[in-house]
Image 1 (tube, rainbow, N blue to C red):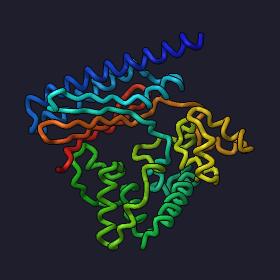
Image 2 (image 1 turned 90 degrees about the vertical axis):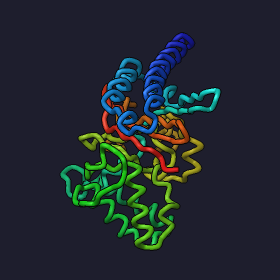
Image 3 (image 1 turned 180 degrees about the horizontal axis):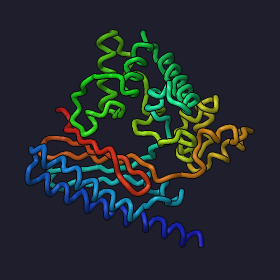
Image 4 (image 1 turned 30 degrees about the horizontal axis):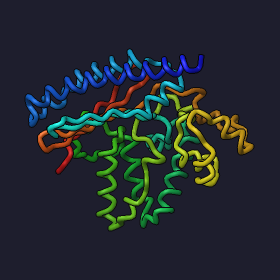
Length: 299
């Protein structure tokens, strides 16, 4: 019976991948026709519809933990024999780290403990990296995330004009601004993405973190445990077993962790064509897509 269930899960994931490959090949066909045309490469509405349909039909809104685990661990990589193009596509959990957006919710009702958690994590990372003026960088971030900043970003994105949305590209620009203002290269030493997610958090903060796929680094910080111990003891999909094994009561974390794994993910495709590389990314939220971003990488 278990073998039959495992085979069914594997086949369903393969079906999703085949469907996604079809979307990507159609996209590359359009790129071949107008490889240097910005408008041809950023056909956002078409991509939203195609990707959403493929994921909705294959993953849906409430997939099993096993299906999600298989899907996340199975990135797609294709390339032409003549080297004309190559492409990788993958999805990762959207809420397995602390939403960076919590740093912009200092004064929002119901977010106090979530802001404090994000703030304490920021302080720990900044201190470990030896930032000269972490308060300066925090100020840049919080103003941007709260919508108070009028800063203009150079990123090529539909989200460029949305002040309270922080993408990786925007974050990098803020890092560069801080680095040159403070002459502090330590800002690049921080592994921000191991702990923070660059995506919208749920409308309600309660049970925001997908604990079944939480990163070991963040789990170590939250539980105040040695990172090496967590990496050795924690296995994806077994959060409760982990807390039981270390003698912790998981009820203490009910305010933070979701009750079950969810189909909330960040999907990214990176491909090369005609000596250029492009990245497209979007958020998938249990049946629909949002936050499409397109970037033509600098050579």
